[in-house]
Amino acid sequence: MLIQTLTKGPEKVFVVVKNGAGATIDKGQVVVWAMDTVNDGIDVEDMSAAKYPLVAGLADADIADGDYGLVQVYGLDDDAIIYTRGTATNSNIAVGDICALSSAIEGLAALNAGASLNLGGTNGAVPMFVCAETVESGGTNTSSTTTAKVFIRAL
Image (cartoon, rainbow, N blue to C red):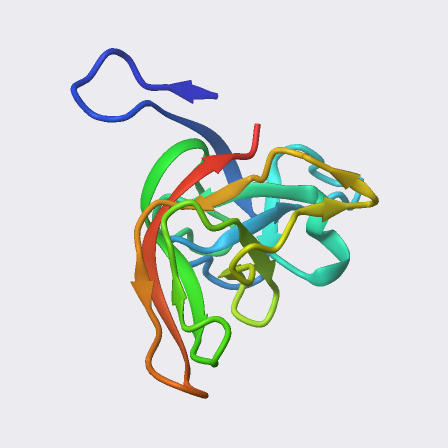
């Protein structure tokens, strides 16, 4: 685990991981621990719906298949991959919105405004990803992928 020393910027924590996904992991992509009894606690892979509880964090840079890299597990990140969708009820992502995991883009998507977080019937759980800037959607009934600031708590 790498904990940055005193700096003028926001505090961040990283873990060193090995890409076991079979393809490059993109910067800002959500990754999960690959619990396959081979390299548990070392290998990460692309996110899939079945592995939501194994979220490791966000890739700090592109990580080629089989290479080691950093995954951010705490602090402010300014290039998380975010999925936006323009609808009448959820056109923009606002500061403080909880980001839900989206396996479709292996990134994040904001919950509808005012939605409560419910993890296995436990309300009030601390979310792992929270939007830290407003992101406008591409318009009504338009979906797009962009990058945005999020606060990460994936320790």
